[in-house]
Length: 313
Length: 313
Image (spheres, rainbow over the protein chains, first blue to last red):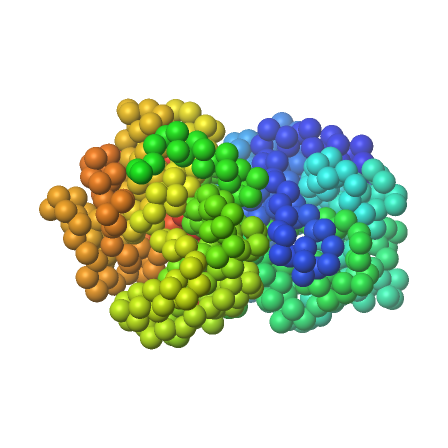
């Protein structure tokens, strides 16, 4: 069932003891550049380095005792895979993470460190899905989709809930959009608390399927996306699109160059490590300043997991 | 007059409204690696990105009205120069910053942005000192030395004061050591509050003049230092050495490779941008774990000003 503000409140209570209540930070020099007050909800400081911990924790902590014993499974070599592995470890459940053989060593290592079982597959969508099906059939594990899952969406919505509890008079809330888990959870939480708050998503030009989907009124799959924001390559899902379509009027797209500039600004001025995907909303704001003039803006910094050996500076 | 705990308390009051009270952060995975509890006082989040803001602010806010009107001067293209420029701007005083022509553009720009006047000189110690003398003679500006100045030392000591007010039961406090301003200010504050707390400095092997000075019982100048920790190239001063000699038993040296590893650990696990100098104490701790076993360790993270275009990863 589609999450509601109430579901998100319950998720917040469920995951409360496990997740970090991340700080909200500001930067005077970024405010000057933006021409308005910008508040950053820092999910890069979240456990496992990204907001994905919230959705994964809510999903795992929602399992029945029987489901828990059979474990959880997903296909993600990114932040969701790590978060799910960590959440499963926390409750003593087995996690099966399907990953392409070609995934970077650092990601394999991170998932393995959380005690998950990695199942390698060929680096194609088909191999990924068939391998996952096989694992689920063999183990009875519950599939926890990275974003197209009500429990995950509700969990992601808890970041916005905390954010608006701390900064009560935000007028705009911004997130990046990939599969739409964070954006749809945020939309439900924010609109539930105050219908007057505007929600704006930032999206890379090279993976602008959410923008296209809003234009066309239906899910337009992400076809051969190409962007440095590697957390935003996926397409919207059947559970995230309707929420986004109902609540979001504006998706602003930005180039990779604009993303890198905004990322660098956050690193230099705020001394924070953020991943490219996390810098997309600030890039969108700086590109469209007049839209935000005089408004109190909240940005959810989605994560800080970057390969320091491959920085774009 | 050599600063005392009382002087440092007065400095804290003087600069209170101007500086940031920086957060103390921890990392579970760094604790695991260190085998003990490590608390980080994050001066990388300080104004102008380093603890140097404290000493510069205390010096500038201690000026008489007449001195203030004549302005302040220093030779430093690094954190002290930026901090002094910013502090002077805050009180409407002129700042004259002597810099080698060869200083990186980014540093020239940062100082200029704070409204300081930059005076260029040839990149030699002699040119630097003669240029500074000339500027002071011509303007009557007060020379604010980067570390060999009682007001500066007292200001730097306020970081440790805040630290021990927040984490009252620290057993060891660590800082890096370059000219010794932070280390001597920390020693006075910490020993004044509790003589039982041990103070340990970390120093790069390639700039181990403080370690040598302690061994030989006199100031051994830093001769052709070579290290990635570019904030720690200077020699101890006549005001910092006696304090250090009286209060510090242990200086631990580390290689550049160990510094970069510790720096990377902080970036990856804490999602914080810290400069190489700031990672020296953690590198020293990780190299000498048995010394710290079971002790609550506090590390002052000195700063976060790095050129993102020239990272050692």
